[in-house]
Image 1 (spheres, rainbow, N blue to C red):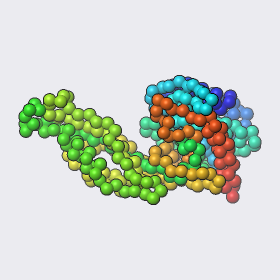
Image 2 (image 1 turned 90 degrees about the horizontal axis):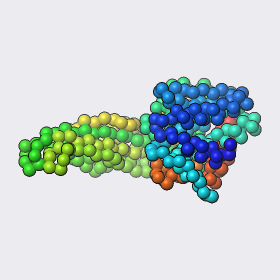
Image 3 (image 1 turned 135 degrees about the vertical axis):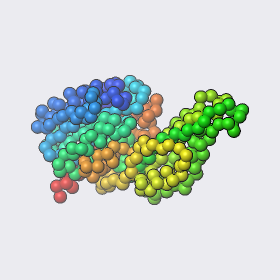
Image 4 (image 1 turned 60 degrees about the vertical axis):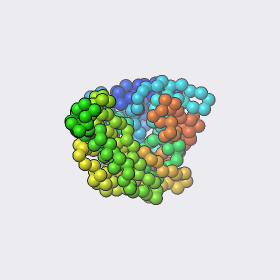
Length: 337
């Protein structure tokens, strides 16, 4: 199957988290002949009922490719024109998975062994598949090539995340007599304003810490002093995660706080001959900490991911196949040194 055809086949399977069973079965069936033909081993790793990672390797893997199978909603079927393949998951990350698979096929045909490919569930929500896989890393693995859209540049760093869920409680009353109540909304807004006005750390490589108030919910009506209010906040972390968490929590008072996500920033491997970048998002790499030294590269732009116009350049997919092939060969040489 041509890499463009494979990309479209993956896009056309609804794999919105947590609906990964069908795409996992498809990839397992697609990859099983490669295991049989080249003396590999393939398995499904059950993460939850109906949700399986796919793990395939040839020999004792020193170099492992990895990306995720799930996508954000809504499902969007594929289409293509002369320049792009469109649809949900085109760049995040079905086109990447297809390029990795084609690179592995080329490496195997050239006699390269000691390779692996790990396709995981749940990256878009909580990294559950990666967390599960990290319990049983392959012995001797040296390098993990993770795939996310980097425009085929080798990422030297990625920001971390700190997700906070804030809940405030108050006492409801008629809004004409606010002195009789206790506004949960006002408590919440005061805390959000303190978070937004903090002097956050910056980093020479990763840039600025950013704070996004993603969701807000409060009160039953505009003429009622609210007795409840909540918000979800995402902080993109560039400094020490625990220090950033302490700074955030120290600014909050009078609200219930839940840590919804906590991933440290990363600095990753440089490889001679590859153009580089820094990305502001986080990946499954911190959750696969025992799978070797990380590298991050993939075709497509993160600016197209999670949009209704998600797409990936056909030329980028073809370039990625060649880059992944060269990267694996270079890393195999480094592992043998």
